[in-house]
Length: 180
Image (cartoon, rainbow, N blue to C red; front, side, top):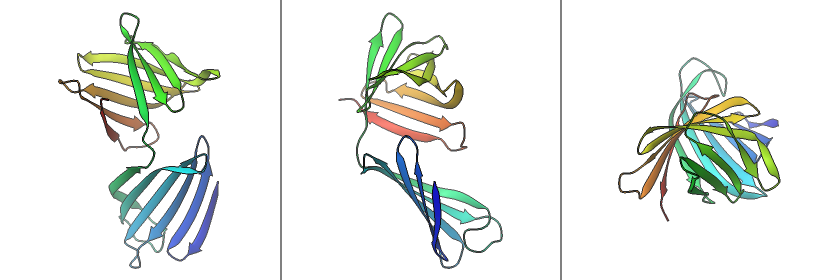
């Protein structure tokens, strides 16, 4: 990871893990607003851009101080796809494309390991059905809880709404998927 000061109001950070993230921090001239622009790349192609804005909540100059977010905008430049199919009698098979990561699971709260093109992965999911339209899932990475997600299918079956929350953040992320 690198973190570089560009000028008195701008910083740049690059991070590489499962995908590359480039973040630009920009503080307004009056030092009261901070804007983060995150660009995520897969194989040198920008797939997602997030813009998060913060208000200053404590005294400070430049980037230093306490901030509270007030808006977030996500632009998906390379749409993701998921394929959801029945799995045996009382379960689901979820495949994430284009990565071809599949998890076959039952609604019993037990962990089920995800499979990739090369075999088992270090991540897993567990699921419970809370009503005929909603499933609550937990995600584990290397045996540690990494996030939760609630998935709700509309009564007409045309949309899927997912609300996910990473354990490392107080923020929830909601996505609406159209059935194709």
